[in-house]
Length: 115
Image (cartoon, rainbow, N blue to C red; front, side):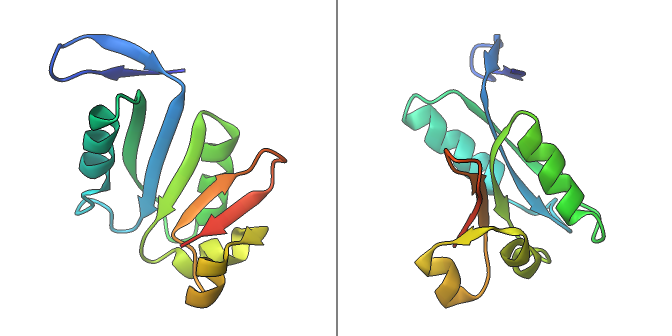
């Protein structure tokens, strides 16, 4: 479980759904703001982080995140093609794009790539 802060109430609460966007650079990403706002609007308790990943550390970072508390990832530059190679299964959208911007494990534990 990850402890997160509700900025409106100031209360801390535990969430079991943790998501992130991986990139390098990543400071510019609006994804945490967008996903957090959407979660609040739909009454979902989740945390969403922007994580700076070393250019030579993508595969290890994905493994560490998804073997821990992580439920799914969004992928941005420069890792979309590397994410394609890491995925064990690809959606039709990912096949058309030849790249992956979403990684998650399905119920069978397979690493799935989508776009």
